[in-house]
Each structure stands twice: as structure tokens, then as C-alpha cells.
Length: 111
Picture (tube, rainbow, N blue to C red):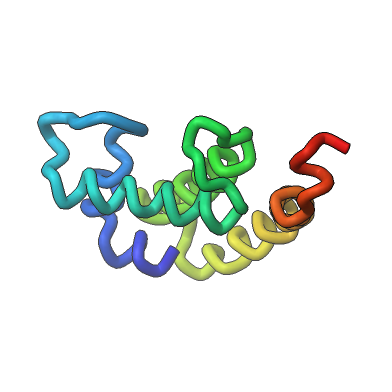
């Protein structure tokens, strides 16, 4: 969130589209966005982008939305931490569940 607040224009550029090249987004911004989503997926135990469930998108949408609101001045700087903390409390059980499933080979086999 701090990065988003300090670099609002870069954040808008990185998230200009969810995939593919766009004329307004150069190779560096494209690469940064791809690395961001790949890292988030790996942290949730997903290596194959085609196998992603809704959780990485939900997490990305939540953090991107909070960042966008803060950058636009719709979320006062002194409330950012409070909102982030609430989002983490709400989404952490889902992330932990998915991590548990990703790390459990029995679950992966469908048993």
C-alpha cells in the first residue's frame, strides 16, 4: 500500500489491463505486472496460471482496490492501515485454507 501511495501513476500503469500487451503499457510495466501476479500465485501454492482459482484474483482485486482508493484520495492516508488490516483478517482464513490444500498431497489427489 505504501508503494501504491508513493507511486500512484506506476500502479495505474501496471494494472492498466489484466493480460496481454497494451500500447500505453511498456515492456517494463508489463513485466512488473506479470511478476506481481506470478509471485502472488506462487505464494498461494499455484504454479500454473491456468489452474488459478478465484482467491488470487480476489486478493489482487482487494489490494488493487485499496491502493486505487488511497491513490485517488478516496481513502484518507491515516485509514489505510486500518482498511488493510481488516482485509487481511477477512481473507487470511481463505488463503491459509488454500495453502493447506496446496501443501497436502492427499488433497491434490482428490482423496
